[in-house]
Length: 325
Image 1 (tube, rainbow, N blue to C red):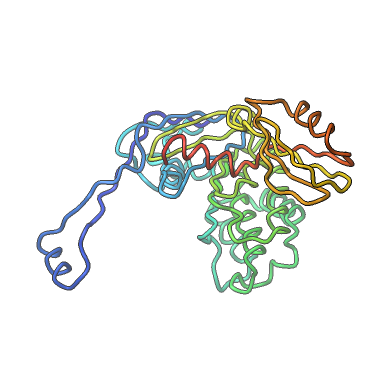
Image 2 (cartoon, rainbow, N blue to C red; image 1 turned 60 degrees about the horizontal axis):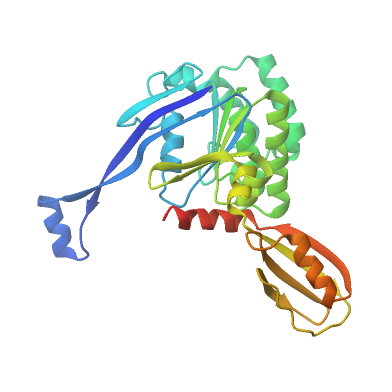
């Protein structure tokens, strides 16, 4: 469905020092530096996949999204999406995609939401019957019926984001690009957006590319992740494989009857402790979790034990360190 081959993109950025003299000098003798936003990246995405496209700020995520959505033209490389080259076949291409940028709006600020929806229907030339069917479905799933007559400027961020997602799907696209869709949302709104994305993906086989810094979004939605850094693809695999490869520790939380005895087990680090509970980090390369719990049971009267994997955020931070990004 999406085939990206050897895409590269660079930008020329003006350079000058502070001060009026430097400003005047730059008018007559401007200095530039070249920033390589993308360097020879390639990947393929199949129909119905939800892919997390992650990386630190400046890694090239938004540049990639803008190229494959047809906004930017790359310096070199190829991209085919449903048989179209995004920057060459823009009109055909945009009929197949929906785009949501968390910090930009496609809704008209002073108009009621329903007016923006009707304008988008006309822009995409969606037949009236198909439009009504899709609109009613989106209103129901996203719970936005009470928002349709409200001007966009009067909506809360969470309300606006739900309307933005509905707007991006009114023309029944086959692919949805989401750039930071839950940024700034409260917990309730985040869960609502995630549940909707999962529902629409399952019901319509909608392909979703998700860029975000919120690893909870990635964990809740994406099985596959693509890690980009310094304009290059560094890792492409499943979230499960990533956890197996980089999650070398488990977190064990233990509740026990009051005890102050010192605990010293090779491969086990105490993160915090009270008289009746403690949290430990278990190095799986040194000791099994079951063995660690067995050693604890010899010295403690254990009441309850829970074992947790390392948070995805910590694993991703480790990845950034490994690849020096």
